[in-house]
Image (cartoon, rainbow, N blue to C red; front, side, top):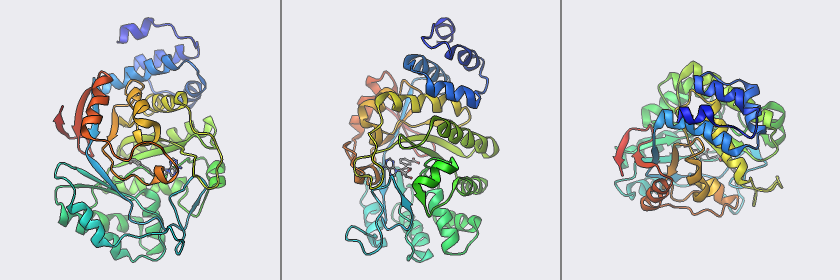
Length: 368
Ligand code: V47
């Protein structure tokens, strides 16, 4: 692979110096990141990203048997891209009773390894709701990995319940929280963030929650929402800030680029992302984020077909069975809400990869 890459000719000559760095394992600069995003040499980008991906993960294509629980859609924040949130009292507002959460978890097939719990910023729930939720999920399924609450939710708990971030996280961990999902990061760049988001954690606060989580031994993922009003400079800035924090903590496990789903988004009339941009998002992430182990090609947002192609453009993971995804589907996503293990294994195999079932933190569960 390295030999082929060293003699390959790129259509875009701006990729040549970047190739040298990639082959030497030298860190790419923000300017390199911008050159990658600006390039239309998709195959050149893919080649570079695939080189890094195969050096790290060989031919493994990871997936997990998981399920999502969105306990409430009630949210005090205003995010122009979000179709999931509702205000208290609106007809579509809902909050799950804890018994319902526990019944759902108890009813999961034994092979499901991960429960992904994310909700809106509900102003009226007691702190005990969240602590008891963690305890009850573990009681129902002691072996299940609980990946719960974005950094934005944790920051909200810190403010609402007037507890230091560290205490919020420590109490959740004590009650059963194993890791945190990467949502809520959206786009860090201040000007852009402020035009599309009101009433939730800013970039510094999101990063501070993650810094604290990692210090307490809670690993997490990271995301970036792209394909809305952000610039390419904003994307590079976002990735570099994640990379800087990862240098400090080492706590990020997976990066997931989230393609904006525009159809039902209330306040953002934009076209959907294109396949070219979706593949570039994966490839550039793989190349810039040299210290985050995994890149996820999230089929919910970019379709199973393109997520599969993503396994040759820098991604080593395809997420999982998911079951009942609400955030993208409320925004009008036309992707399925469930994938069977059979479907996932087939997608990975037909991409020429070796399907590896994993748990949340990438312990191998089964080679398929
Ligand atoms: O934080 C909201 C985004 C996120 C839209 O960590 C939208 O393993 C696209 O973070 N179009 C939640 N995106 C999803 C998320 C996630 C998903 C899968 C795995 C993991 C993980 C994390 O979805 C939100 C927000 O950034 N979002 N609305 C929309 N219209």
